[in-house]
Image (cartoon, rainbow, N blue to C red):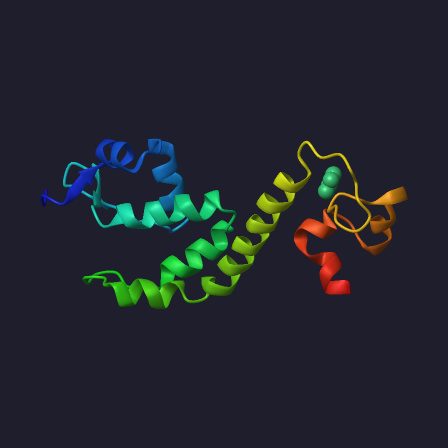
Length: 151
Ligand code: FES
């Protein structure tokens, strides 16, 4: 075994995920392993970066299909550099900016109304008399920016 390779238990411990998660990620084509002569699974240490990206991306709501699409662009079988990762992540730039804007709006607006209770007609993002916003479509329309897009 090469020194950089990890057993499945070592990989799970280092990545902070259960062994079953490693098996799932592998079945989905997100990570790869190889087998020893004794048929023991081994992971190259570089797979840790892929797992980290998967975990963070899933945490912020990036669908697994999109995570895989990015990881598929990162070359295998050679040293992967910063430029390789940057090129693979390019398609995420707009999507991540939209998520950041949504989370920022949610943070700002939630804090705005907590403990207030005014439901101001001009300023309150929760103000929705007679549920009039339902006529424009479903969901949290002000928080998602759907109402601004209509204006
Ligand atoms: S309840 Fe006062 S601004 Fe929303």
